[in-house]
Length: 77
Image 1 (spheres, rainbow, N blue to C red):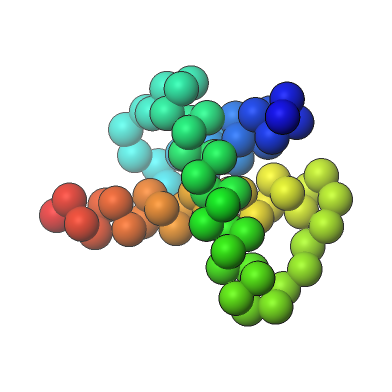
Image 2: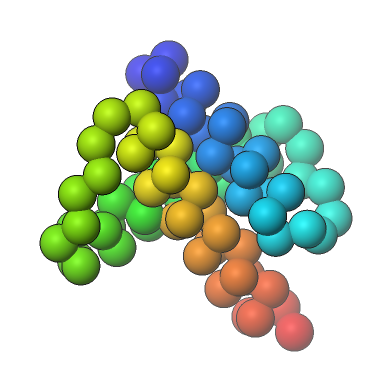
């Protein structure tokens, strides 16, 4: 659980940096990273892509979080 929170924080921070928008803050980065991990995991399962290890977990969560930010920005326009 602690590792998942750490991955979420890292992934949310990286996704916020990649998407360059308004700052999200610590809690929103954490939530974004955790949900990004779920979305990224679902997407990778759908595409039959396996990416293991610590780096793979962070990468999957970052990709999912970036996708979530992109969708949220499209909906809010």
